[in-house]
Image 1 (cartoon, rainbow, N blue to C red):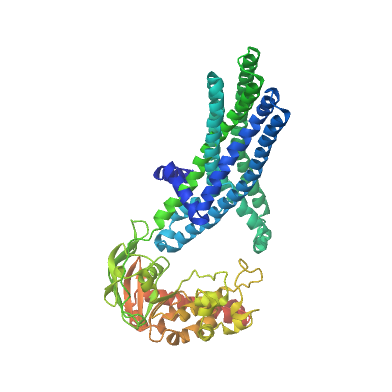
Image 2: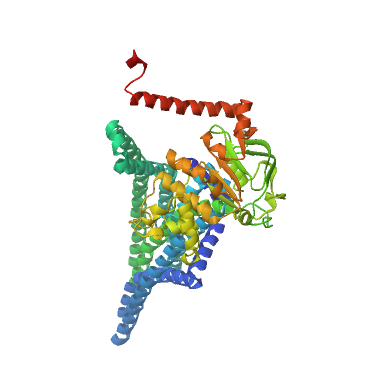
Length: 624
């Protein structure tokens, strides 16, 4: 229910009228002012056509009993019927056009959410808070046509139509029998209240239903994924899956029972109210007819109006109630939109663009939760063109430091300087042009190889010679040449069903090629060889000087043998640099770095010795 509370909070923050105005602005911006005219015309036709249909029997009787010439009476009836059919045709056209406008508003409006996410501060977009809010906001556009913006627009104009129809029918009834409106209104309100209660019950379990549905979808995907077949069979997990399916389905049935049970009870109330309302109304009209207070034409007209009044009133309030529910999704989007507005940042250009930079950290701290520091009071200078290695145990703060260096995170306290200029004063886009970064958790997008490496906005902007050279430097040229369409081959099957998949090592090489293609003067590599085999890793280390020549570079690795290629090694613990120096200096210091290096070396030596023992047919036991 956490999501429900968040949605309700957003609804309070953005009022009903404000959200309706937002919907209409979306409609006009995406579909043009003419869309608003068409939707208004659809409402008018939707009210007028049934009104004339209800009045037509009265018109026919009045024409036949008026004593007028037959041709005059026939012309009057024919004209009314023709007008009615014209309204039917108009309603068919306006309804189709309106529905199309609603779809377009939802689909193209959804791009606003994508744009917001793309420009939001990275620290926000990766937070748990953002994930929850984005999940709610996506319902405004991407679930289906029965939810969010599209349904809100449909309900908005339906509510307007219901209100107009209710007023028109009430005006006719009030002109002849004003007191009859009292039971009509009271009984219809009772029916509406029951339906609104059912809607609230439904909305109260909506988030739980989403969670149960997502759990079922997860189980379905995992059960049908062939990659899971080995573990499911070897570890006899099929019984667990069956039990999990049963639990999730039971939960789905339980929630649906709550929802459908509420609407079932509301339906009973509505049926009783309609029975009493129609019984009272028709009894009153029959009495008035036989008392001579109204004629047959008036009786037929009022009978039609009484029948339609309750329908219009029900439609108005039902649509209004459902509109309030759908506007909660609009509120959720608007909250994300406001949150995604980038924080105030610098506007200056990066100093010395395209040249190796000096990076200086002055008492920099960073915290994810506002309590413990992931990086604590760090003062450090990385000289221009220097090759730095960052090492330490998991959780020491290495990746966090890399994200601080390239401007994805802002320090909680302290400052970072690029060639003496405070990074906070630099336009982020200008700053990011100076950094090429390869993160450990890398993956290709489902675009072509060329798109993934060049990140160019169009094919004509790709430097093919540079692309080939970077793929060769990353030892990926042979692999790409062997692909069905070379660098035009799609990766993954999300966009192109015939796309190919890369191994973990090939993906890391692809990301390295991307960093090389960008050619930024600062290179940050976070475990760039983690998925490579030992031979490929060694080849990469041997070329490290070539790949980072003339650049300021920071290299993170858990394999300390790679640190020998760097001019200075920074050993981190608990967000602090506790040791720094060359490999030989740190080994001589016999501190944390030396202990970690010796532990890794002992592990590899033990592995080699065990391998040799196996190759020679045994160990000490055989010798004995």
